[in-house]
Length: 307
Ligand code: CP
Image 1 (cartoon, rainbow, N blue to C red):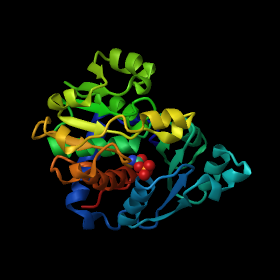
Image 2: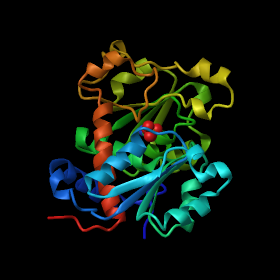
Image 3: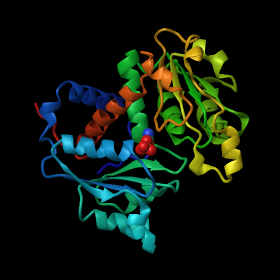
């Protein structure tokens, strides 16, 4: 039995198989409509979510399966003090696979250690968000035709943004990846990622506070919101929340085939006027999230692909 806790739980060739399966699902959805008949997905969300939870539900329903779960800690027995370890042992009796989001780093790993069904990490604190990363890889591959040989700008809250941490881990495995890390000094990428991941792998990157200047060299611009819920005081959040706003003026400096991604939710960091630019790919990214989660569910449940 396999779990997905970190983006590195799948090898490069397994990721390639997932992307291929997701692309086939995109082109041939009816073929998969009954692939998970009789199977149940549990969504255990101790933190708010729109996309991740509902795209998992949409994915399972599109495969013919059914879904159960809770969308906040308050509406579960966590509010009475039940541990993640106990909860997962209970959920293992109710479902065939589960996706868990929790504010504490490592919660999904704890769940996996006690689970008798596959566990998918749907975000653990500021740590990792591997299914967002799979979504991002599918989006980049679909738009650019490759995952290597790209200059990727990561902009915004690089300290607390778990999607950025996961994406860096995943992309460094492809040749010719270069990063431009755009953030205020207070929200720089954590030292452990800079030193243990980027430097250790000999990845080319530069850090800057200036989005305008970086625009022209990027193949992908990955915008992120400032993660209000991870700040210790509101004053700091208010000071930094609008540190970057991508607008039509800044887009003039970008390559014609550069694409803008964002894991969403967006707050202020991308002006709505950018939505009409054909290079704005963040809503297409949402759709890719359903296809890749369908592929992931099929893979972890070891369902044979229908012909
Ligand atoms: N991208 C993402 O994780 O969105 P949600 O928080 O809405 O799930």
